[in-house]
Structure formats: structure tokens, C-alpha cells
Length: 332
Image 1 (cartoon, rainbow, N blue to C red):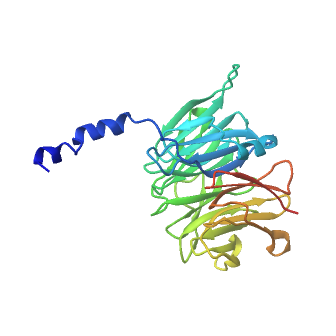
Image 2 (cartoon, rainbow, N blue to C red):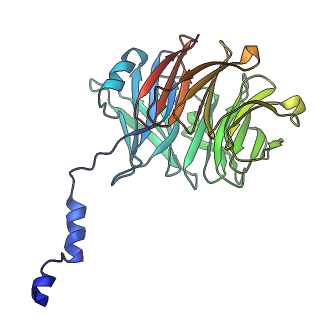
Image 3 (cartoon, one colour):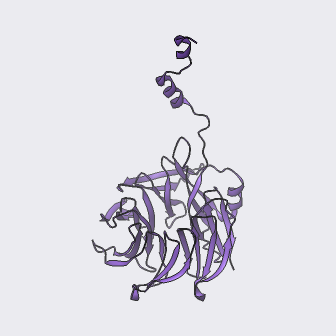
């Protein structure tokens, strides 16, 4: 074969790039569901990310608990489309308004239009995190929200003042912050858990942490403030622990899982605690009976990522996972 014949078998690099740039077929990728939030009226917010394929986009779906089975059985399109992945989000006091954390470091507010189309539109967005925004919690409904991210920073936002950052805890942790827990019935106190192994206590009125609650043996993956003086956390070693702030040196090990604890969700009315790890299992404990193990479910075919209790029925738990499905669990 001559050199001319060989050269004709190669596509010039600039043409190869042009074909890739203009190619639009086969760009759909599987949506990995990353979090779930439930409004008191029964509305459900689910955030998803497209972690594989040509585009790493994300989005959110908002639907009613009564249509949950419809979501599972059909390929539902996102109500909100994002140009990046989203790790967390929540409803405001209004079920027609949500706040989303994006991997670009952006915090965005979306609301449903009042016209006949009922389209979700972005009201405003702020991009002040220097890394992905990973967690959000409410301090004061419809007014104060606190976010944390991969940059190790914590920020308190005022929604009524067009998302002005009231407090910026720069370098709150030396590594990414994975979770925020707000004290029940409080509008100023919260804790943060980080990969740097620390759980720190904060007061929105002060510019520095109140104190470091504990230094754990490994990174903190999730936490939740469940009572006035008690915090539950899960870590990278798979340990589910309980801290009493009146004696934080004595951490009570509630359970040890075979994988890192990814998310926890506590129902204060039924005293039930749901847990998911880096596996396919949803586990529930009865905290009123010394963390009694009462439920296990393996309905997801891939990692479980998000948990949320129904606001209308304390026995109903919702879960989402990387299999792209929303599951309902009845726990009695």
C-alpha cells in the first residue's frame, strides 16, 4: 500500500473536532438522582446530575406525592435544567419556589410562573462559593438560609434582600463541608461536618465558630441536629454516632455499617432515623427505643443518595438513588 493510500485513511484532526462539535445524537445520559426534599403540602423536589456522557449537566423535578409512581415508571423530563450538577436543594416556605446548590458554586432561586404554561424560571442566582455548593439548610423560613461547599466556606444568605450574603465564614473548615445541621427551634445556631474530621458549632450572629464539637477519627459525611443538645452524624468509616453537647467528649456509637454513611434523615414526630450508605440499602432506626434497628430495604439497584420523610404521614419515607428511581417506604 502506497503512502498516499495510507494517508487517505486518516481523518484530519480539525475535521474530527468539527464532527464532534456538531454531533447531537446520543447525547442523552442517565440521570443520577442525588437528593430529595418534601414540602409540607406533599410536593417533592428531586435533584439529579448527569455524571456520565458528553455533558455533565443537572436539573430538578418537582411533583406531588400522589404522582410518585408515575415518576418511577416513565422518563420524566426535568422541570428545571441546569448547566452543572446539583448536590442539594430545598423548598422555601412556598412549594412553588426552590433553592438549588450547583457544582459551579452557584446558589439559584427558581419559581413556577403563574401563566398557563406553569414553567419554572430562575429568579436570581449568586456565585460566591469558590467550589461546588454541597449543602443548604434553612435558618429562618423564607428569609435566612445557610450553605456550605467544597471550598470549605460557610455562607448565610438573606432571601428577602436579593440573596445578600450576611455572613461569610471563610475557611470554616480546611476541607470540603459535606453537611449542615440546624438546631431545632433556632434561627441562629447550626453545626457543620467536614472531610477534615471536625464538627463545628456556629452562631449566625458571630463571625467565628463557637467551638469545635468533636475531632473525629475520619471525615464527617452527614449530620443532623435532632434535639436541643443532641447531634447524630455519619462518617467515612461507616460509623453512626450520637453526640450530647453537654458531654461532647463521650461519643456514643449507635451502629457500624459496612460502607461510608452518606445521608441521614430524622423524623422528630415518630422518632425514626433513616440512614443510607455507599450501597443499595435503606435502614431505619427507632430512636425512642435506644436506636433499635426496625427496617431494611434493598429496592434500589444502585447507590441510595437521598432520604426524606413525608410531612403528612410519619410512617412514609421517600428515597432516591443513582438508579434514577424514587421509592416509597412504609415503616411501622
